[in-house]
Image 1 (cartoon, helix red, strand yellow):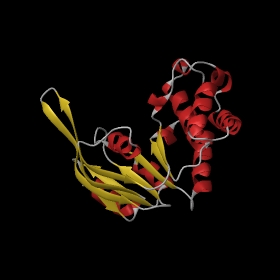
Image 2: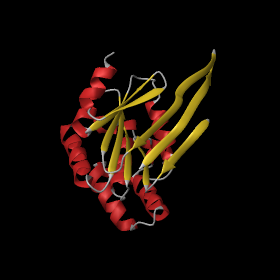
Image 3: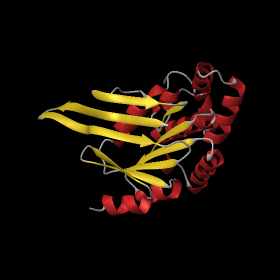
Length: 214
């Protein structure tokens, strides 16, 4: 389970502080697929980075029970001078996983072809996202964090993404952030709405849609 207790996060902008998360308290139950929906700029990616521990809140506390992935779609953790394979080997060693198994799974899943052996700095943003997705799926996490990456790739690749999530249901949780309720509905059975710095948890996507449309 992941729990946020009175979490606040603000950024300095040209006309003062921009409050992204305002005294947010929410529990994400285990072994559930949960969406977080909100308009562009609402702070969804910031929320995901705070859950992952990449960023710290200005106030409040985050409790994580279990192994939590980095945000899939967040490519900032890759070394641009290393190839896709070399990045996979590095991450596998950090997490104590079989290097060869992680490399083989990611190579097949990401479908990067010859680019898998080329420096990541030569990748497009979509290719980075595919590498991040494949590498995350190659490692068993209790909670997978997903930042819009399911929109990457063609219909066949997106179908493979959904099938991979489904194969992990019952033993892992997925938290997906998106501004698109259609994406949330395809993957999630419950949803939280992030608007104006506040988060409201809804037991169903239908309930979230009613709030989000206001």
